[in-house]
Length: 539
Image (tube, rainbow, N blue to C red):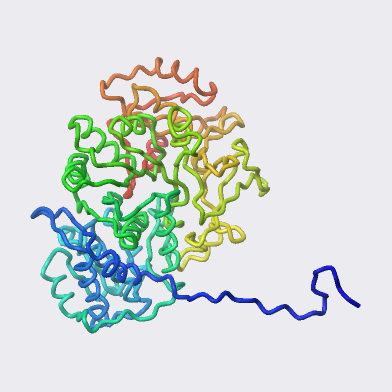
């Protein structure tokens, strides 16, 4: 009997998969270094050191990177061993950033701004046997490092100590070992705003694919025609993948070292003809303030990307005054980090409609899938109205935390990464973040999204910065409290602000209390530390 249905009978053996006749090689980060010494050899890396600008070509940098592998081997570091780096965006740190994974070890970037107990925890939990420490940080951090039981030695960057380490390597005899693309490449810990920091263990494949994603025109659009200044630190989620992207494309790199003030960054942009920069809103706000007072310093800059906190209308308009296209990205340490970018669609390239897209978290990148999950676990539609937790799947998203099965179980839902963000998604894939789920305020049975309320408060010219948190209330359950940094004129009439908000938000959203402060507390990665503000409310 002939089966004409096209379906395989139940007792039939599965058909052999027909494989394509294409070459194959693993997506590993040593290929970034190979690219730097071949196709992109003439591109350059500059950094700002205490002695002034230092500059090397990609080819010169790659020769130094090739020394790292044998130098690590001489110290007994093998594939899979963690190697910690504690420093800023410098040439030496970049060499390790690229060279440690290329040698098969695991790069463990550590935030030097962490509190001592968290710093000690991530180094102990990460298990690094060798650490590289910025020499300027030695007086404050060496006592902490001496308490790490498995840490065998510390090498000081920006010193003869580091050059002596490199001299033990012989690049002309070193051949990059064959690496597996799914083996660990880098370890980065979350900032630990709730509980202890959690380790995100990136693979070579995840870092490589993330870099390709941000090189896309639909992404950050990094190309060989760019000069890229990552103000975002190397220890903050892989500097958003910008060093990898520059290495692959041949974009020139400019590293600011410790100098991240508005003036220092502006002068680097001006002197090095930077075309692309990226950083958190607090840094970009400082840069804009200096640029407004010194016209022309941003003439070369075409694109700036911000992330880590919501972008404000004043920041968007301010960069537009200087002819700079300011984009907003969204992501998290667990996603490598970038998953969206706020490029407007082609039918909305200018005016208010374009700005409405620029103020979103952005459109989902091609290598990212998402779903919205309601309170009862149901899937919600992408209609721009239904709000639920946004969950993600991607080849550069985490499927768990390093040596933390309990936190992993809470973070991953049947293969989907839980972001903890309340969002809507429109039919074209643009994400609008409503709030962090943990920051939502429930007042009288109604939800108040603090992030959205903060944006409305920030739209007042009397306000330069704001954070809203909940305080317990016997009648309503919770009520919002706003901590406000006044605008440049310093004056803030609370009744006028209340009246201003009445035309913009529901009445029950309006905070009962406005606390005027000189500045808002920040975490080690530059985000507003609402944990500190909640403690102030309790007190």
